[in-house]
Length: 275
Image 1 (cartoon, rainbow, N blue to C red):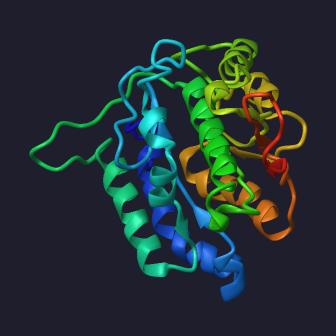
Image 2: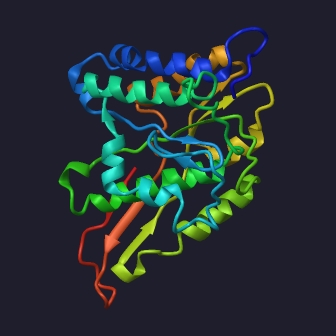
């Protein structure tokens, strides 16, 4: 939100500061060309729905009602994912990507003079998790046809206060809905079978963080950071980024198994696993 906290910066302003610091942060954390080249960054925001920087994440879109038309349809194609995934070694493109997110977040508290201040429609954690699942699933499927996509590790860092107010609002219901949608073999007509268990790194933000919801959704293997106030967002994110990227901790975030079979159910490709 854009409201000031205790006379200091708002959460949105602190997010802008954090975004601006990301290029230098990654350069210092991953201090060799090889390490930087091995990592890519993709950022999505969620409010009423979820989306990339070029999508509107504010309108309310539930997974159930918008399964075939929500932002996750256009946003999780292989083309969209490639467009939104920036190699950390590509400093020029990374800076451009960060600048685009800074401009988007600033509309929350300091929009251009010709525009109204942007406001969201709740916190749709269900949509955020579903979006991340779809990204992992698409990457896993693409490994069969795109050698450049092979051996990719997908890690998701969920930053929220955990108070879901849009879509499903209870952790158990969110997981049940994700299971219904993601285990239903939507690619049966193509002979595709997928299984996408989920586990996340989480940054819990604010004084009223719903710890129970976030820990239930995160599972036991994810990393946990905490930002009690806006000024702690950057340090809280560092607490989960650094161990994951430099020490290899918490790597089993999303595991996707895929195989292609013919009409008789005979496997025509090797089983692939994306973590």
